[in-house]
Each structure stands twice: as structure tokens, then as C-alpha cells.
Image (cartoon, rainbow, N blue to C red):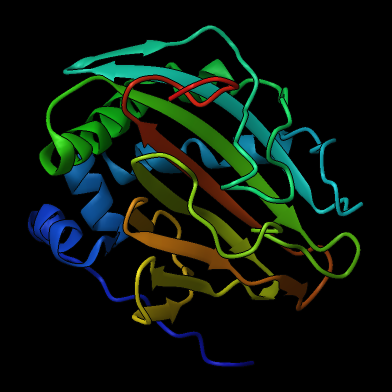
Length: 247
């Protein structure tokens, strides 16, 4: 088995400095728990809910490898409010494969997003975004993903290397089971600098200043059947959710 390239871990107390300097950072599971003020067991309690994700019916490449749920929230200071359920939408400029399409996914289950740990996690990410870009309400889209090897290969980012058209992105690894590949790649948006590594330990978290970097994850293949890679992706945007006609 190929040796996985470990991610460069950022100490939790250096997170904002790293984001200011490099535009990206990686928290260890302990660093994420510390930053969010949650117990690791509170995060682990969510993991079984990735077994209940409906298939993604919008894959334009014809694949069957992705399952997901999606919900939206507004974080204003210490107040977290779940927004009415809405479609996920991105402009073509940021997602050439699925841009311009209103995609309606099943919402996240209350057993995850109504928990105190969920609110603490969102508040901690919003605080980091405010430290970078100024205190303001943050419009958060939360995506639960399972990429599996049903057809022999699964594509975590079928759109390729991209920005999400938001201000701040967090990618939390939830599980990695019997797969190879799935290498994370982060590149400067305006230069040749980049790095690559593999998220392998649950709750290791990649944080990105979406204005400054582009990112992708390479396809996965099975080591055994079944194989999958579970993630939680959280995007934070100022001035409202993305949608047709949004700023």
C-alpha cells in the first residue's frame, strides 16, 4: 500500500495567522475539538449519519458514486439560525460541471445539526472567518458527502480544481474506508505555489480562504469492496447565500 503523505498540521492557536499568511491551514482532530470547544466523542456521535445519505441525482458525468445532504445556516455572532431549506446553486464560473443548476438535496438530520456541538462548530468557523475578513453575519452551507467506489472509482471533486465562490471553506474528514487515492491538493489562485497531502484521520480539517486558493481531491479507488470517503464541507459567505442574481 502506498504511504500516505501526511498533512501539515497547524496548531489551533496559530490558525488565523496561518490563514492570513498562506490562505490555508489544517487542524488535527484534537485541534478542531479544541477550537470548537467540543469533546471528540460529540463529533464521533455524528459519524453513523453518513450511512443514511440519499444518492446525488444531479451528477452530470453519469456517475453513481456520490451521496449527500445539504442544509443552510446563518451565524451572527453567537447566534446560529437554520435557514429555510433551499437549493444549492453555484455559478458556472466556479463550477463548470454543475454551475447554473438549482440542486435540491435532502436536508441534514436534526440528530446532527440540532446538537450543541454543531452550533459550537459553526460559531468557531464563523469566528475564524470574521478574524480574517471582519465581523459580520456568515451564510453557511453545510454538505454531508459520501464518495464511494460503487463503479470502481469515485470522484470527490468531479468539477476539478476549483474555488467555491464563497469566502471561507472547511473540509472535515469524517471517515476513510478501504480506499486508495483521495489526495488533497491546494494551490495559490495567483501563482505556482501548492501542496498535496491525504486526509486520513477522522476530523482532520482543511480550512481555506476561498479568495486566495483553489483546491481539489483526486479520485478514489477500492482497496476492498465496499470503499468510501466521508466528508463534511462547510462554506461561509458574506452578504447572503449564493443563488441566481446574488452578488
